[in-house]
Image 1: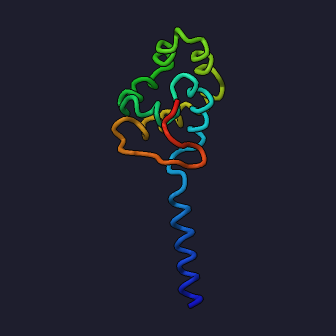
Image 2 (image 1 turned 60 degrees about the vertical axis):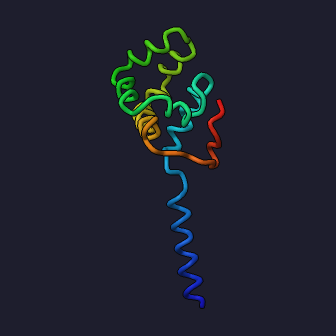
Image 3 (image 1 turned 90 degrees about the vertical axis):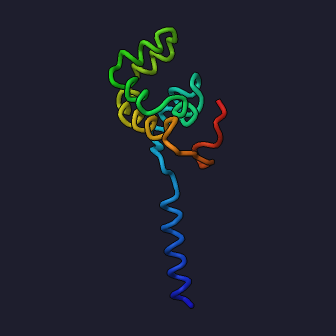
Length: 116
């Protein structure tokens, strides 16, 4: 009986650990800090366009700046060291959670719903 309980306990630990956070939480937090005030939650923002569009916008810095040219706070955030350091992670997060990615996220410690 102890062996069965031990095996069940170990399997439950592996199950819960693999189910937690299936996305890049650092990228999520950076997007939340820099982009949420204008664009809504990171998942909401990611779903607005498909992965090809995210690839296009991140190809060069000027494309993102051109989109944000009328928003001084947006340009400031694009030029921040935080954005520059995590740019590739942000791109990957947005592409992985884009319009046709097939991913639907529920609630967790970082995120619940698509309110913006």
